[in-house]
Image (cartoon, rainbow, N blue to C red):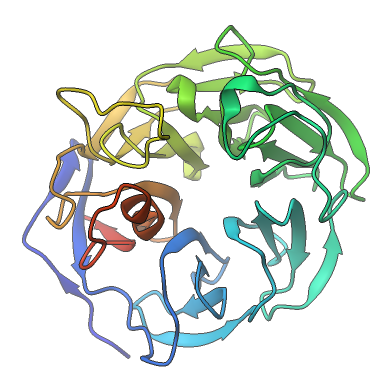
Length: 333
């Protein structure tokens, strides 16, 4: 078994403090690892990584030891990854306009909703500013699985909708509209369902988390976030948020602020009170730095895993992606 090497840094506040693990994980040299666009943890704490290279899905032990890989040439462009309680994985392919359920070994069990043909929203590229909402899918982003097996899918880049499917994969309802008013979305990017059956949506470009009941009625809004990409619900309804920040990963029409905030991780209680936070700086190569946080999950020991869209974001900005972090582990102390 590999030995994890922690840094001396202690991140976070109060009873929610963490140490970064250096050089996690160990990736074989013959793997075309580009970036960890998604990350999920199974019930036995295996770590699944959605890779924008080939193969698309990499599997690791908690200590970073490589186990296996699958998904060669299976996706147009990997985006979101969610581990369900039954052990299966839900994977979103944004440019493939597809959401699939897979076994941990890579067997496709079913597609949820239509696959491959975008719904008509009027989107041009990834420009969310001039779209109308529609049914599934146009550049979907992430999936949340409720305890009863119902699915809530954020249809995110080319749409402004949440789609609710039952456990059999039949569409129950769609809600949402494009904009920044209450209940509207500008890139509904991340999503989770908590123990109270609330649906939390990371409304990224509106820099807020909107909380709904299962029928799409807005219950609450949290605003102490900067461009949240994903929200993960842990034990006791503690919420872990991966924030992209406003330094990197901006659309071409978004100028960099004079005093930008880098990517960061924030932890909230069930009422939206901030418990702990780290990151936000401008040097992503530091132990407490992030370039472009994109996904987040937590294992049974409380360790936090963060995937970053570092290569895509840096390339789009004309910056050098060499040495930028894209997959991080933080151990709770």
